[in-house]
Length: 203
Ligand code: C5P
Image (cartoon, rainbow, N blue to C red):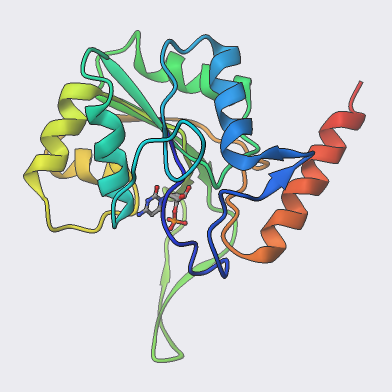
């Protein structure tokens, strides 16, 4: 499923009408999932053919999960990451489906030094050796994801793996893709367009 609802408050407005190469962000994501051969592709959000989203991201995800009652595995992707690739989805499927895990997520090793800050003052330098920055798509067994959502209805989780972790689910990490950037602020759209142009120039 591609989640494309929400107000885009940090971007300065909803992102569902934005395009790259003339194609809406959510549509680009759907095209990749269809190219991978995923059976059913659902879009959550105010887009043609989309189903209604919820107030929080996790509510939109739940609406999408409920729309595919027969699925064994569900793959959840932010429409705000339109540079997702077939290779990344393939890596994720390989990390989850043949293995004894409840899900898999893409992670990138953190290369910046990370500090904990309170009121503009550094309080701690965090050991980054076992930290990864996490992207979407994220894949889970549908039954486990539903149980995770039901277990902590009040938590405003920023990703689905966070909820699955809370119920003790096992989540594998596959190599993320640095070009799978998230469009959060207006400058990010220009970066995504540049990545798209670079890719179209590749032989
Ligand atoms: O707000 P954030 O940048 O974390 O949103 C990530 C993704 O979740 C975006 O693709 C956005 O469209 C989606 N979302 C949603 N429903 C919400 C909030 C966000 O589908 N209520």
